[in-house]
Image (tube, rainbow over all chains, first blue to last red; front, top):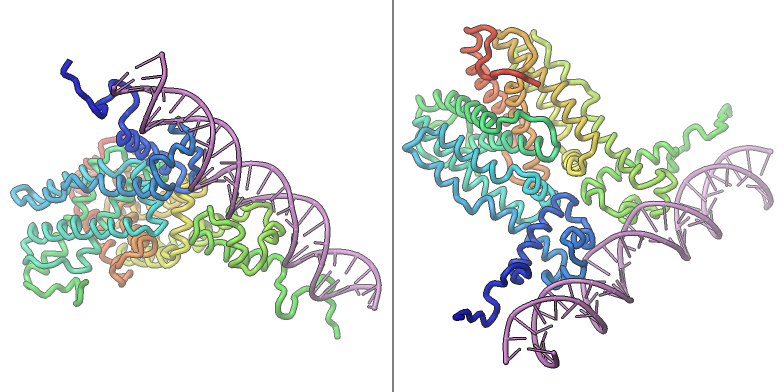
Length: 229
Length: 229
DNA sequence: GACGGTATTTATCACTCGATAATCAAGAAG
DNA sequence: CTTCTTGATTATCGAGTGATAAATACCGTC
């Protein structure tokens, strides 16, 4: 046999590699903290993992370190796919691009686990949460506004704060659908795609309507007096 | 002196009546739990109140009972003013009514304390939170849709689930402004009235636009195939 | 099959939590 | 001043917390 795994390259069945085990712990811990909040006890967490509590401290120096891993996993995963870049593909109609993006984005974040971790950490005032909000603004919403401006044949410029605010209202309206469904467990319109399409139509029709007078009197933007950002 | 306070009707200065004291405790406890979450300790709470921890148990049988009082206070206060009834005053334009209502409503709920208690209790899955969501739907949003239908000269009928969903998106968009400002402490467009006016314009223009084809082909509502509620 | 290192468990510490009982203080009535 | 009631404090309990050290079980390797 030419097999020569000096450091046990891949164990046959059970006994996952330390790193795999660690990731498994993080995954389950994410579920656990999503359910119980970050005040959930390490003993109960260990019970769910089917191990004893002190074992956690072999893989993570402290509970806070474990929680940190959970944050990273939750916050970075949905963004690393880079869908937002497809927003700028101007060969396709703006409506289609917005619908596609929000369908993909909400497919990623509209889960009980993601939303709960997001809200829990938001209430704790974590930097990573604040940073995420800024990423949404810079990577998604400014892009949305820019593309809408282009579609409305408005001159290209940095979005005004009023435009950005309306994009936030639009975005927040969609986001709130997820909260109602997965946090409040309320009855929502089951067809998420339709909800998004309707929201996009609402936003676009409002944007285009407010763009018309602005397009005629180039430059001067009566919706926003001065000084954005 | 004709003073005859057999049971000490009103103490001159300090030493508030038991009920006043109790209310003061609830008020401060609301602030405390808004900051620390409901896992905040009774000792720290007592310290903030300037009293010792066991004293709390003279006014409330248990911590949970105190929390219950906090819930009631927070959830019932902003609704008991009954602004939503002014939504139906059809002598005034729909835009004005919507703006007025949301200005008043957000004046009441857009505070750090209210929003945080709301989110904390929402994450705990409390009945009172679920009930509140239903109240928003029944007392506010169905009314909003009905008034918009009337303003668009559509036949009066129970809002379709798609209409209700768009009202939720509109409502949630405004609500999310408060979350961004008071939970995420993000920089928002400071002129709340303008944000609301713009959001109302967005919603109304989208609603009216979608209403036009529906108004011509009376009755059949192509935006909603069947079965609402 | 014995060895050696790693994975896991048992036992335990120091601390904090909500809650209770006993004690003390303060103000009104006699 | 004394007495009685009620407000408030001190001291403490038992359960649960995160974390550590020592002991044991497991598995690949020689």
